[in-house]
Image (tube, rainbow, N blue to C red; front, side, top):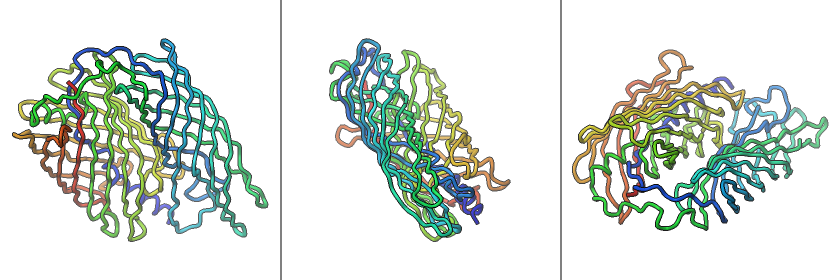
Length: 479
């Protein structure tokens, strides 16, 4: 029964929340006309972070069912102070994160598990600065509140404890606006074992690793006011340049898409699956010739249960793509780089329980009124819960947009996926369909709204037969 349960989870995720890798409508090609002066990192800041935490987090019991290791969603706030001396940075930072992991009802009893409820850290930071880029390391300490459950024959026990430990980490940060920075960070928090007050006593391993994405607001501007590129307030409201640029996934502009994927008749009970993606896109300038486009996908998922006529709601696995793209690519616009997914789901049914990694690429052309291209990636599991099945997943999303007058356009962008590890006949999902959209302004804010429908002409058993995709994207062009 457990194998059926795990297989059902894998099939549901690869047939459904794979839509979390959907290509959002993104950002135009506008850039600042002149190079900005060097970025200033000094001063206080506050921010928010989110990501995945994982640990051995389990009782050392042979055959401990699904919970041989723990992965969980973490999210919270941070605050700190930086002092910059030339190319060196010194600072201090404190973080507080909540952790969330739910355990589903299983046919067989779970013998024991440990999960974290909250995590607090304080650390010093030292870094190397290169204009808007910061490479940093941190060292300090932290506290974790853990909850444990033991369910052996004759022994039922539940307890909680808060324990301190040492913290080491490293990361990279980028100043994309005069007051705003984004960061990607890895931390290791070493904790002492927690021994259960039972006979016999069992050791609870709680060493915690964390991968976080974050955004910070600097109270002191990183640039003189005149040096920050201004919004393109004078651009035409229905400019075809803005239309075409908003459909370019590796354009040099900040955007914030919100995308709803409603998938009908999913799973054995023909329920509706909802994947709502929050997809911030931030271009980062490596040099005059190269950009790095950061694209993060945070899925909020309502997933049909493969065993019961119900849905499980929560946060799915977070995906991060980095596209290295030339600033002047010519007629063929392209970007290549890595894509990885962290097991941040707060319930096993909402994620794979695995770390995924692989290559990604975008190719597109813009002849006449058209924007035509394709997004490609393949991810393999490289770690995570050893009791969850491996992953080898492919995604291809061809897209074609034809731009009309007054900001309107026609669009098609089906998401073609393959689970290479599935049996023959159960690997491919191939949708057909399309829709329309419009680029317009709400006050002075440019937005891109879109609606489209797709029918899955080829699909594995239990996969939704058709879907409705709607999106609303905030665009932030500069002159």
